[in-house]
Length: 70
Image (cartoon, rainbow, N blue to C red; front, side, top):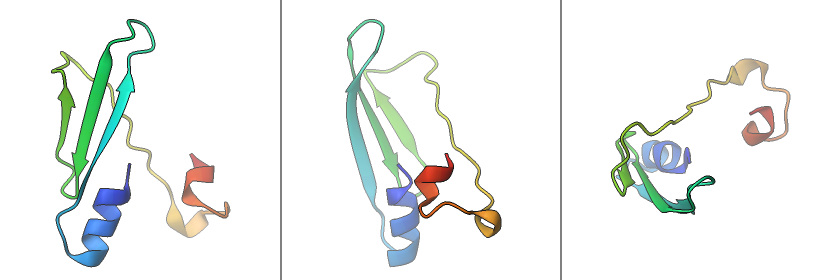
């Protein structure tokens, strides 16, 4: 999910991504959108969507990939 933000900054372009999934409890479809400015949206509108933005200490990263440290 960090791709639009990281690539957008590196390429100096506005980028975005869209993830289609479904609620694990109700089975209802959910679409999550994120752009290179960290603007986001959820469809259908959700009352209180829960998002997590992990903070990683890049200088002390031991994993071969940043995803492995999550």
